[in-house]
Image (tube, rainbow, N blue to C red; front, top):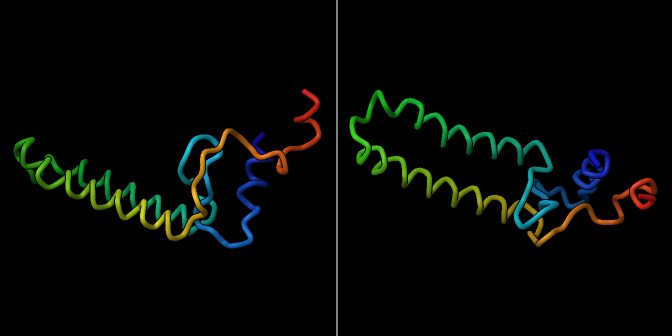
Length: 106
């Protein structure tokens, strides 16, 4: 299955940074630019939460500063995925054109 998944991600003639997920709705990184965007997003979300205890005293203050950061960066990530990715759609697995003959024999 991993071979078929890699074949699906590499079949990217339009150079999408994000391809449609194989299961469900949404995107998955398909190029290094997509992985970079996802890594930066995770760093923007994780780093402030780690160091917040030193700079913010109460939980209410944490939410006051962290919640807008979370909402804005998530909206920005979705916007980038929409602009640089293929159109998301519901998927239920690897499309048949990426499967090998062994997959059909089972």
